Length: 503
Image (cartoon, rainbow, N blue to C red):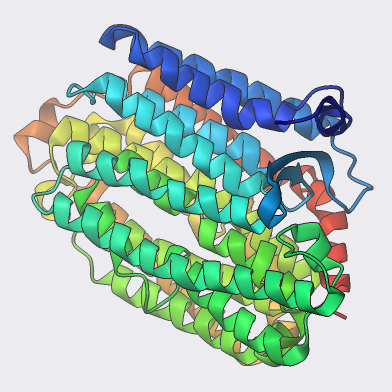
């Protein structure tokens, strides 16, 4: 039983446990309400819950102390006392912006699914809310076991969302493959967390420690750091995804619903895990193997770009493009500089708007035409000029064109990588050139030229709610591109502290 004293401590940050409200009360309570609602109200309940979640997330952002590099709004409750495992949540400059961006992406997915989900819509939105809960839990967990719990909980809703609402004939194979791959990746993660907990208990002659903040303040022996570094790197590499553990992503993009592809490419939980856990818990090992991180980044950038060029389907092109962009994020992390880390974080935020937005638009296109094969399209801009325009804007942001948020992130990463790993920086520049080649070529073949398909000729453009959603994503892309300090001011303190802990 939770004591009143413990509960008071949990609420002391701002008067009430706002993170727990975001995590548990809103999404889970809304999912329970959905169980007793009719199908027509399901989407409205899910949308309202996400709007409230977004507003609460923005309250956190506005109350966040940017001068404080540590964790804020901490809530701590006894959970499994016999194993010294507590419910601990909190946020810092690295994690806070993921909360409103996650809520915004799920709002976009709900709006995008408004008319396209006709089979079991109530179950669809329940699973979507449960997935949102698990995702938010990943970003705010400050206990390694609690983090692992939320990490694994994402598998259940994703599995059923792919099986029941996937669009490809091999969707069951894709769902099973994703689940098995992620479960395999979870084994080294859990093993790494348990090793760290036992080492702390042995060194301090005390209980097992799963408290992330305590682990940060108790450096591990160098020889054990190497083991934990590789365990956590392997576990997070599956989810990032990092080559050659990426094969599940093209399968999900082709077989699953566009909403799940938007989440997989828009929220790079594996890359976040590298920043949050792998390097801070094994800083000496991470610096010793900086060349490995840089190498993985180079391979990802070039491999993803080259494979994207040869694709004949928009979904697969975006999947391999995502692999390439993750490689760029890994390079930013491997630079071990404040500038590089800020660029990597900025790029992770961008994925939510750019990659997530592109897959939402592809979902709109597929719903209208029944295909995302390039040979079946052509001339889309003639009948759907708004959809084509926003796809072009989002694509330019992915290329890092000046005036978009991608320009800021890519330049921060490139400058820092060229200073620390010159060869890797040159490879990244080549990858960016290849990205321009595949996007512009495929865009020209898909959206420009004569209309080849009767379905495309009669398709309607974006509806009002779809247009408003696209304007929201596009507006943020431009705003963050022109005023990057909105993002950088929030991440600067935590990034500097993160780099400082490595020295």
